[in-house]
Length: 315
Length: 303
Image (cartoon, rainbow over all chains, first blue to last red; front, side, top):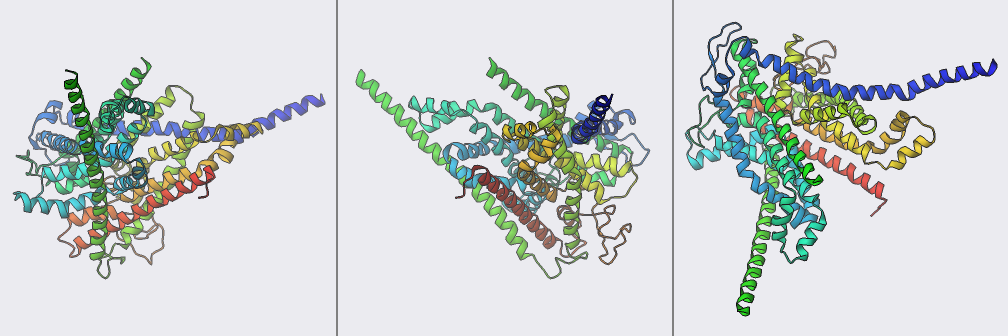
């Protein structure tokens, strides 16, 4: 009787003890983990609901939104019937990002090779902190430098018609901004190539350059592509720095020196000026949704690359 | 015949060596170019900022940037207050509790998606949920929430990495003494990896400091503070988080568009850029020093 009571009390104590010492904390931690999923889904769903208004409420076709260049949405709360073709902005985004990538990728990879293979000590001590500072500089500051230095420079050197606001200026600003992303990811990939591969190469009498481009770079190909896609994702989502130098004219660029606009710049400039719930406003939300979908596409691509890498390792 | 082969071979070796030398020079040039570029950029921004200082630029009125500086610090403070507990707890879950199942995989994909979202998309989400749906005006709190969404993934992954890198014996020792898993985590593991988490938080704060696109439509592009008004519910009270609060980074953007309204707009933007860059330098220096201190402590190297 007596001892039975004692055990009963003991289990009670252990239960509350475990609740306080384990389940409470564990519950909070799990809750926060799940919260991240909820948050991500909430962002996706809210943008999806808001962004599809152009197609459900105002009955525009998706093809019109993607491929038409007729951007003349009606900017009142109820009016409709304007054009919502966002092709100009989509082309602007693609053009500036593509150009930035084409400009900087060789240099970024060169820098990655430099800091890992050529001068690893200086790379660790000087180059890495410098690249970290590059990442840390806020994007508006890049935009501001682009606006006060690069735009006048292009105006004076190339005699650009629109005072230097141009695709070229936007691409250069983006290129400088995505350089650290590509370099750090690529450098990590290069560093993780097993040393035995390099030694085997040297053992066969290869020079350093031969080891780099025949062995190290092919071996770290997946990591390099991941870096390039991450850089592209950053370039695509960059808003204010590009908006400051691209000129924001609603027309296709005639050449590299003429101004145009892109998705992010257009959203940043007009979202606050349009009547909430109106056609123009909804079209901007559709563009935000497009940005969201594109960033999801990049994530998917990265998974595809790392997935194919793992499969190869297994085989 | 043999001599002929030998000369071709020698030629190839010679070519390979020459190529090697050329490429080494090319790589040094690329490396040097970027080092010079970052140096020139940083020095240019700072010198340009110092040259643009005029009396009153640090004042707390429409000509100065004191209010904006205060807003930036205050906003980052709130965003960390929100994102650090959630991020650290989620990191603990991922490192200690998460099993190898669908849920874990889902959280990982979510973290990845969140970290790659363009900041303007996060800002628009904040605008939609915290401003449009609540019917509120621009407020600092909405901006802080948007920034905390941006810093959440990095804090989570830093915490997870820090916890995973601890020696297994820490956990085993604590559990062997009869501590529960959670007690082990918050009495042993968390203190042990605190410096690394702090480093991650400092870097997140640095990013929050320079964030602008996410704040464009959340915390508003204006600020009006009355520094003698300490009534927390008032719109002009500095400490009220539910008031418009333009930050330094956003001020640069506003100065560009309102260039004609303010005679000092260019100088103000230069000074803002300088302060932002100096803050980023300080943040990354602080993070570096903590990391250095920790590695020294862990390896027992006093040199």
